[in-house]
Structure formats: C-alpha cells, structure tokens
Amino acid sequence: MLDFADMSAKVLVIDDDMDTLRLVGLMLQRQGYQISVANSGQQGLSKAFEELPDLILLDVMMPEMDGYEVARRLRSTPATASTPILMFTANSQLNDKVAGFESGADDYLTKPTHPSELQAHVKALLERIPRKVDTGSLHQKKGTVIGVLSARGGLGVTTLAINVAANLFSRSKSEVVLAELVPGKGTLGMDLGLNDQKTLARFLAGDPADVTRERVREALIPHLSGVRLLLASSQPGDIHLTSQLANYEKLVKRLSTLGRFVVLDLGSGLSPYAQKVIPMCNQLMVVLEGVPNSIVHTRALIDEIIKLGFKKEKLLTALNNRVRSDTQLSASMVQDQLDYPLTVTFTAAPELLTQATRMQTAAVLCQPDGVTAKQVNKLTDKIMELEALL
Image (cartoon, rainbow, N blue to C red):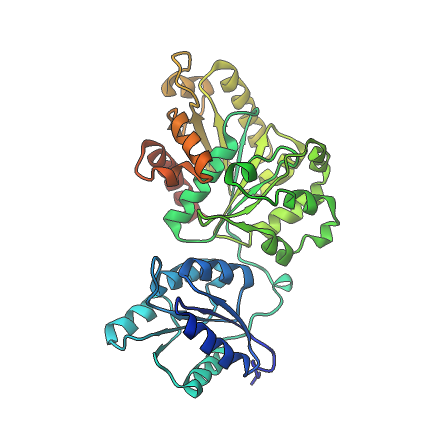
C-alpha cells in the first residue's frame, strides 16, 4: 500500500472558520501533506479546479454557498469528479450526513474531531481511492466544445460567447471555459476588467510541445461569473500568430479537457485557424444580423462550414439585432432568405449591454430574469440538448 503522506499528497481545506483552517492545516502539514486552504465555497471551487488536489476537506455550514453545493459542483466537473471529499460539520444529525453523502461526499466527520481520528480518515481515503497520476500521460475526458463565429466582424460574437458561457455555468453548475482565439483583436479582457490579455499570444508564439494541459489550466483566469477565461491581446501586431495552426490544434485539445463546456470565440470569417479548429468542435454557433448583406455572407459561410464536414444538426444560428431599427428584416424573412433555421433571435438591448460592460460582467447576470436572459436560455437549452446526444 502506498504511503500518501510520504508522497506529499495535496489536501485542500475549505472552511469559513479561520481557526479551523489553521488547526487542521497545521495538523496535516505535520503529517507531511501539502496544504491549501479556502475560506468560502466559491474560493474553494476555484482552488480545486486550479490545483486539482488529491483530497478535499469540506465544511458544510458556510455562507453564500454551503458544502453540499460545493460537493455537487465538484462532482459535476470532470477534473474533480473523482476527487475524494471528506465532509465535516458541527451538526451530528443523521439527515445531514445523508445529505452529505447524496451530494457526493466519500466520508463524513462531526466537529470537533480528534486529530488522530481526522488523520485516520484522511489516510484511509487516500489509500482506498487511486492516486491521480500525471494527467499529461492519460486520456482526458473531453467536454463539449462550442465554436462561435460570424461571417464578418462587429456582429457581437464575443458578447454572445460570454453570455452563453456564463449561462451554461449558472445552469449546469459545471466547469465552463471561454477562450478568445483571435490574437490582436481581443476585447473580452477590457470588457471584464482583466489585465492579463497576452495568454493566447504566449501559447501561439511558443513551441507546440509547450502547450501542455497543466500550463493551459494554470493560465486560465477565473471570473466572478464562474467562467474561466483565456484572453487574446488587443495588440494589432499579434495578428500574425493566427498562422500557428499546430499551436491552435494543441491548445484546443488541451482546453477540451478542462471543462464540461468549452466556448471558443473564433471571431469572423473562415480563416485558416478557424478551418483547423471547426472540425474539433462538437457544436458551432453562427451569428448574423437581419440585413441582406449579412444574410448572404452567412449563407456562404454555412455552406463552407458544411463542406469542411461539419454536420448540419450540430450547427446553431443566432440572429442578433444589435440596434432597434425598422430597416432590419423580421426573423421569418431572415430565415427564408438564409434557407436555414434560426435557433434564437435576440432583440436589441443596448442599455443592458452598456450596463454589463460598466459592471464588467455578462448581461445575463445583470438581469437574470430579463428578455435577453430568456433568449440566451433558449440557446443554452439547445446546446445542452445536443450535448446529451454526444
């Protein structure tokens, strides 16, 4: 039997009580474990997804997000679905223990617990459940990869991508990743108030062999929406990196193992990198607006996508009416001219989008019961329906 203490197993302790964090952390450190701590459920999830610990000690009674919800989210995310969870609480009622096991806990302790009892449970869990090995050498479970693009720029691809990603996280309670894949044209970082906008450029500029799963995972930036982000720069000179097709292929392969849903902002047009990435997508979302030129260009784009071998039934269309105008065609007229079914139609909401930018978040989080959120819900319903068919 392996001695996990000697192998410095990583243990994440999630508890809002600072005294408990210090006490438990010190006690396990003395046994040779590597300790990481989080004082809230959301922080605990972020650390779990970032650090991939060997064991999680999880308190039940925490504000905002309790331990049961944390456990459910851990279990619904591929990267942490099998991570051992030792749940502990001050409440010794049987119903609470049952709820803990039903939410995904592997073991349960009641506070206060004796140090030797805690150590015994930790050791038993680590010895009973196989230790994770180097993730780079194993086949990783892949999530659903969703590409978002348009025939030309300025149609709201990035805005739709962040709202779909945020809505998928809220609906599924699973890990969601959003990646901008157009170097030199990044806007997401500025809209969300995030600083590191060179992540994509660094991966594209280097050796494809350096695009490892671990490095990609560490480079993802957590956002308050719950989505983890890979950002593109806004430096025009970085556009030359779109020729790094081997890097793109490696990057998307890595991203596909880091969340249940991976949303890719592919920008506009059918560039060489888009042609490389599109066959790697499980679903594709094409954005257009209700004017004749946009419809003609989008029809041509869809034809080319199908020529690449992409299946029609996995192709979604979003009519994005960005401004209120009588010059825009109705949804039925657009669908007739496009000769392809529309998945969803978005009504113009400029005030809401301005508010979202000011608050540095997704529009669906500003007004979760609003019209735009309901329209995004319709789109994510279809995405999740198609996911179930994979």
